[in-house]
Each structure stands twice: as structure tokens, then as C-alpha cells.
Length: 565
Image (tube, rainbow, N blue to C red; front, top):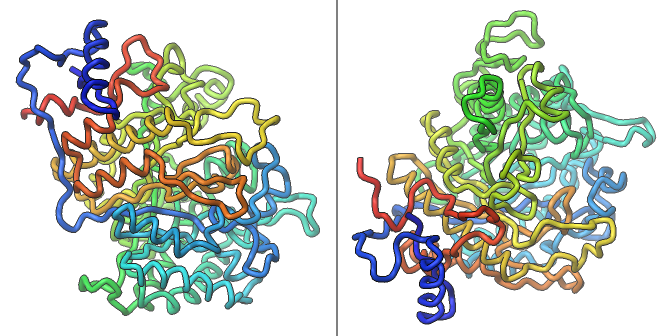
């Protein structure tokens, strides 16, 4: 059974819409029925944290406080015209000049936590040369967050690095540079030095750290499909080397934080709480039961979701991702690496939608016999088979599935670590078309229809999160991605994830609270998904759900009441 749909304009509109859809036979629980259904409300426990998350390059761009370019791998990537429609990112969304107002906007949503990524390239533009003015600015932002009554959470590596660490342009003087995707561990020491420089300046304000942001994402988009710097394609060897160095970088930073952060900034009895964030989504066979796709799904789920977690909990390092730890001929040799073990105190789950596995088409057939893939992952419904493209999806083509969120939470619960949802959210724009001709400043306003879809996305996913907590999963918080529309990496301003919509045509970048933000605010105020909140934001169907019989994407119908054991 699916719920009777409700709208936003009063009882008559709800009644008319419900009656019409019931007449079409689309809904089972309709006026006049007596099915005894009770809404399955969820409530978030005391101490559960609501927050938002941003990354410095996405909101501040390529320029420093004096208007000079901060040279980084991502600045060079933009100069190579790698962003859609040739976009550039000089100043993000204007956060640098209005960070205090944005912090207040987070407060206005009822949030209590603000996650920020620090840009290594701003702080250490040359080896052992630190820009103290840029560090002062970052500390000023962190201090403003703390002074506003929010707890700052700091990410120390969110993809943007100095050009002496990674420089993707082969035609630049000296050629391309990549000191991360190598067997050489010198970059681990470099990152440790950077962290040692930052932590003393923020330790009296910060207790929670997510050292790395989505390490496996960078293997995939930097070394397999080439969309992100350094732009390598199907280079599994280099991608694995990058991943291994990132694991050692995390462990080194973990130890530095434990050594240097001796201040309990939030008064909870602990001076630091250290984790990392994971690209977290289950991958499913397009054709369940197909042995090749089942093997591929198992292998890819291990690589995406389990590989880094195993190394940073048990210390077992699987260098070639073959799911064992006893290969002596790898570099480094496999086994249990003591310095990696027990360097996670929590895991940050970042979920935007599930994926499918195929062994068909050019890429599927290319990879079907290639370890550790044995098939190709699909994350855009347009590439799904059969009726897959009709599934509900966001402006990037990602499938909307709150049930997949629950599956992912259950997967990560097996590590026995506290979980924080460090990113979750969706777009308020439709899929861009004719990108080459777009004026990207104003091409994608947050339409009412897409805003309503985004609001329902937040509603369904937070309902599933609440049910997972009821089932015993230790989830400590939820940080929405993101506060205000920003520069979404190679998509730039073509994808809008903000709870606040930004007018990029106005040089002051004004923000407007949209329906996604309103829904989040309602859920935070209610400390749960109540029946009233559900009825306010649920739709008859997602606007992008084009199936003959649209449906909720939750694992169980909330209007049926609690699932009986």
C-alpha cells in the first residue's frame, strides 16, 4: 500500500487529489476505506546531531582574499576546460565574503553542526611554505561557526591539493605531477606536515574530524573514468597506488590529531573523534540471479564499500583488491599493517543513490573479465536496461532510492563503529540539456517541481534513517549536502544541491530558502518524521518517476505502521 497523496494548499486540494488518484486505482488507502493503518512515525534520539557540509574550493573557488589565484590541481583542471560548458570557479558561491550570514542560515534551519573542508593548496602552496593569511581566514571561519553555537567538523583532504602534490596538465612546464598515485610514501609525510600545521590552530574549537573525503571516489573518477584530475582512464594500477597512499595519509593524520588535539572543545569528555567519509552505496545486479552480475556486484561492493574500512579497522591491506590479504608479491606486500589498524573511531556515510551492475554494452563487456570489476557499475538511470530510465532520479541521473539508503546503513553497521551521515541530499534542478549552449549562470533555476521532489527525497531518506536507528544501528548525526548551491566540481553551476538556492547572476550571490531546505527545517524542528511532516511533503509520486505505477522508494510503507516481526 502507498499513502494517499497530500499537497500543500489545504484540505480541499488534498481531498481532490486523493479522490482522483484513488479513482484511477493508484492508491490502496483511500477515503472511505477502513484498513486500520497507523502512520509509522520516527523520532531521533537525544544527542542526535543535525548539520550541513561544504568544501572550501566549492564555495570559495580559486581566488584568495586579495584576488590572486590559488594554484591547485582543480584550478589547473578548470584551465584545461574540464568543467561542463567551459565553466570556471573564481569564487564559488561567495561564501568567503558572507560566511557569517551562511552560518546564521544554518542556525535558521535548526542545525547544530557545520562540516567544512580545508583546502590544502590554500594553506601550503609550496612545500614547507605556509600561507598564514589563508590559515588565519580558515580559523576565522571555524571560530565564527563555534561562536554561533554550532560544532565545526573538519575535513582535512577534500580533493583539492597543491600543484606540487598533483598537477594534471601534461603541457604545463615540467609536465604533469602526481605524488599520490605512486609507491613512494613521501606524500604521507607531506600530508602529516600539513596536518601538524593546521591542528594547533583549531584544536580549541574542533573535536570531530573526517580526515579524508571519499577516497575510493577519487580512484574511480580520477583513474578509471578520467572525469576528475589527473584524468587517467582504466588505470587500475595507478588508482590502487593512490588509494593505498590515502590510507597511510589517513593513519598519519589520525595519529597527529590524537597527539596534538588535547582540548575538549565541546565538553563531552573527549578531545577528538576521528573518522573518514566513504562513498557509500550498494550496487545491485541489473538482472538478479545472473551469476556474472552477482559476482561483479559482490566484488564492486567490496571495493567501493569495504576495502578501505577493512584496512583502517583490522589493518589488513588488500593491495590488489582480490579479497584476500596474503599476496607477498604486491607492493607493498599484503598482510596486517599495524600503523593502519584501529585508526577509525567512526565512519561517515555519504549516500546519494544506489547503482546497478552490467556485463553488457561496451564498458560491461570490456570489464567483465577484469578484476576487481567483472562488470561495469552504472550510476545514471539513463544507462540502465529495460524500464530503468523511467525510475525516479535527480538532476545528475542518480536513481532515487530511500530503500537503498537503508541497505547501505545496514552494510556499514557491521563494522561496529558509530555512523554519521556526513553527506546526503539531492538536486533542485532537472537534468541539463544542450549544455554547450547554456548560459550557466541562470540556466538551472530551482523549479518548484524539482524543489518538491528534493523535499520528498529528504523526507524519505530521513524516515529510513530513523527506522535504521530504531533497528539498532548506531547513527549519531545527519549532515545535509549542502547549505547553498555551489560549484559542483566538473558539473559546476549546472547542479544545484543547496537547501538555499543561489542567484549566480547577481554578483552578491543572494540565497533563498527552497523547499528542500524547508522540509529539512521541519524535520529538524520536529526531531523526527511525524505524520504531519510526512503529509506536508510527500507527493503522489516523484515528478521524475515515469513508471506506469509510480511508488514510494522506501523499504516499507510508512502509512502501514511499524513492521511486525
